[in-house]
Length: 396
Image 1 (cartoon, one colour):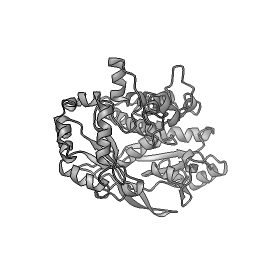
Image 2 (spheres, helix red, strand yellow; image 1 turned 60 degrees about the horizontal axis):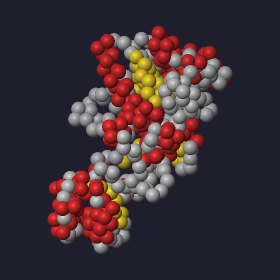
Image 3 (tube, one colour; image 1 turned 180 degrees about the vertical axis):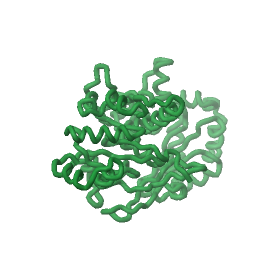
Image 4 (cartoon, helix red, strand yellow; image 1 turned 45 degrees about the vertical axis):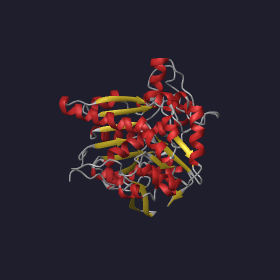
């Protein structure tokens, strides 16, 4: 089968997470991704460990499959020339430098857009290329705080808590991928590329969804709810006899089924709990009642009963239980690839499935500069002598 992005060439001069996550997703869909890294140093995440495997950090390995690595000193005039030539031959470029840095390197949109009018140029910043925060460095943890996410995450009576994964970066990378695909589709109609500008802050604000709407529409300030939901009851985790279970009785029919499972017809008949709005209103009296009921049986006993009644529920998995979960394994969300220094490497699988294509892990995450010679030789036509000279001058 052909892949959705066959013959699309992506020049990835980004690093850390948002940019590499975006380009990994494009690579999973068949694009040829050239990852440009600093000679001798590489992507910052190569050093973000432990854990390490075969000299590579687990962090780096998580977002750099389906790419080839080229080491290139873009600050050197000849490195700049090589970078521009690669951009001329590419369909997409992704960068996440601080505002103004790409321009200083000769890799800004204005210059590359003239060299390649069909180029889709995606720029990811922390706060945007203009405005009062333009020059601030954007890291996920800080932007998640500024963007409102950290303030609504944590226990109801506790302090703010960081989400367990760099979700602002991940959402920005996924948003960038969608924006790039839309721009490629528009290029099919116009023949022209364009610049895409998105930031961690704006993506995080947009991702607040109903929480943002509650404030904008009704002036309702957000707060922390732990595992609970401010607009639905019961919709949270409960402690069973042995472990936690999550339960989502998100409508009145599910509420009645839950009362049946709990053998509490009195709760189903109580007019104070007759609608979701009433259950939210009387949350403080209802939730402790439910909590006491869930302590009576083990998590698996509750799971069996809840699933039988069609009530959404699930365990709070550790990584071990997650990656041994039969549904996760059935949907091929764990894949094993051969890596040059690690051997058999387990990676998270590709979440998107197509009826007419099979996205796959064609390449393991590359070693630093692993493909420098072949890219210079095959794509740019450099001779062995020219490549040797570039190496001697530490340009590659």
